[in-house]
Length: 183
Image (cartoon, rainbow, N blue to C red):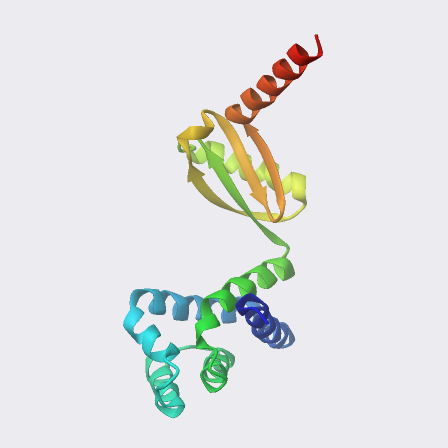
């Protein structure tokens, strides 16, 4: 089984518990605290992932570091990952949990790429248009890529809407070369 498949199972189980206890947002917030800490303290993460270190010591480290978490479910899943020697999936599990939580809340994440930074007013207008289009609340992730020349490329889930100038030029080039060949 792949790391992502294993992470999905843990995330799904945690999400089910969170829904049952009506704590989807709170558990996501606690998981975010864990992920942010582990990104900042890479050596501690390496210790928790090390296969030869004692599991009980790792669980004590987790209990000490994350004693301020609001939800015991997060602490329990972290300790379970240690017991099963799967702490290496914590990042992938978090990403899947967020995806499931967003689905539950009817929130979609839109990755929006433009050639230049968008003003706050344009961001708001784009967000409203995407919310109307999808029927969901939209969380924007904004990126800039000057290579698209102009326009916008929007990715929501598996759907990509490419309204970039570079895409239009590419289509125009294909039409011209196809028309030239048929003459």
